Length: 368
Image (cartoon, rainbow, N blue to C red; front, side, top):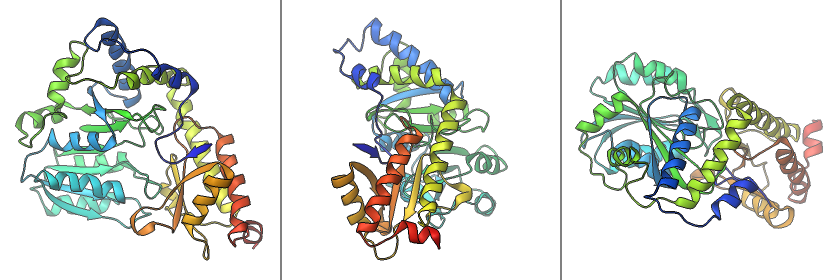
């Protein structure tokens, strides 16, 4: 089965073998040694010297941790959204009592730093900016560096980043871009089954943590830091997933970050160019097209749900469908983590066979 959704992603055989190991004492020296290796490797990928804390959760748990560890009820924050996950991050903040000013951009477009600048200039009471780096619902990757530079023009506002589907696949320079709290999840580009997430915390974020009044317990990064100093996590960790992450980091670091990023760029380009070559239209603004997921418009006369069903059942190819109002209107090709160009070419080959059976001729469309 060619699993090509934006996560969870396929795992290397070595990782799958590692997660099947026998359990160890999560309060013992073996786990402490492993956690130290993982911490060092993850910081290298994050490109940070900041603290990185590990949580046993899915990506949404890490997004929640961004909010509850840095904000208080009533804090005014700017929620920058270009799709489903940007909306989710803002909703989490609202759930805990933040006063969220939502700055929404058209799905398929990237956030405009100029509009963010205007919003911050118009409301000096804003204390933090919430932003999703890579929006898998639309196939758009925000220019996070430019957004961060814009926010910094307005002082020491917190920059809270959902990088769940970008970190380890595309560059995220946490220290260079002066990002405060950044979340990622192992089930994406890290090539590991779901269960472990990470949150980095800058000095500015820790200062906010000391003042934050939102309720937190399981996702308290202060507790996580205290236990990390002992080589532990505060609560029982997903030990099997840590085994896998330890191995996956070795694979990533051996390949080298620049090579990893270049591979994702090649796979993203092949996905986009291959779709266009069949006469299909991309959903995302190509200037900001993601190198981890490509969103493609379903051609007129074809039901996207029928297409993904046929690909899954008859061509052993699993693609993501559209979310919310895009259900049935787009399909999404995930190309992050354990992926090579041959995997993407196999998707394109399957599409070229399935589409004609549903009434769309790739060859005629491409020729025109």
